[in-house]
Image (cartoon, rainbow, N blue to C red; front, side):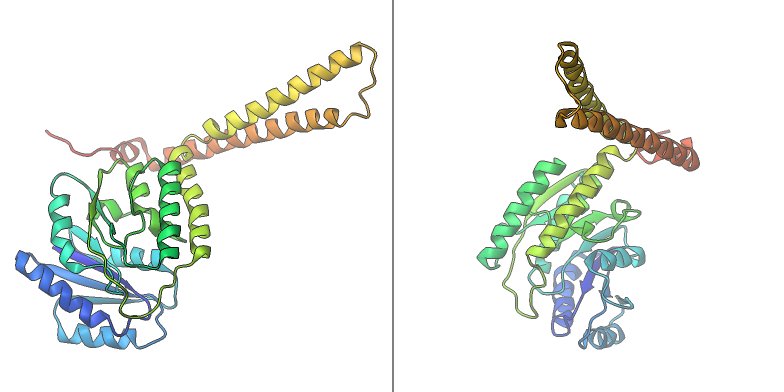
Length: 312
């Protein structure tokens, strides 16, 4: 079964139209499919529209969140309730074209685990296109996952990609990065993008700023979650070496008969050594915590996290 997960927030006028387009795109494939609409605390009549749609169809499921928790929480709820072996996500504002879904599924069958849409001809204002381009460049540089459009809402996944992924804050923007860190294969496909017909955009520069901080979180956890000493230990060592070098220099100056008690460089050298030792100690503590977590998970379960296939 194919599950189409649709986060909804104040999209009363578009949900029924989206379902009709999904049906037109997916019924010719001959495969069973369901639509999982997640009402993310809408304040208009979206839930009523979804209720009517649910009553009139046999393959619509509706999840209602208690309040507006954000797109990441809505997607996480949709993934948890999806029953399909393949999952597609699409926004409810009708800018993403459901007719592109079969192309994504064909690409997925080529051996990829996640296929992300790329709005090559984006129908958005220039300011938003510019911010998005900058954001995607920064994400590609920091994460090493080079996609043209990281934040496209139209994506196709094998179900095991999204099950168990931590989604909170703005982490839904980095699903390809999170999947890449777990060893899944990722591809990108240009898709049709349409002008907004209903509602208004809720994206602004402040969301990109929050997304940047979440990017740092994703990058740190992906690279150093199980080896924090590699980051903190190296940083602490550099600070300590610079501090010790400074103190050795002041010792030589003192041996030449010059006073060093009133020099700010003395305070800086001592401070660098102390801070370096503290940062290195944090790295050691992190290694202890990571080691205890691995023991709790168990060697067998931890090994299976990275296994793709077993032939016997």
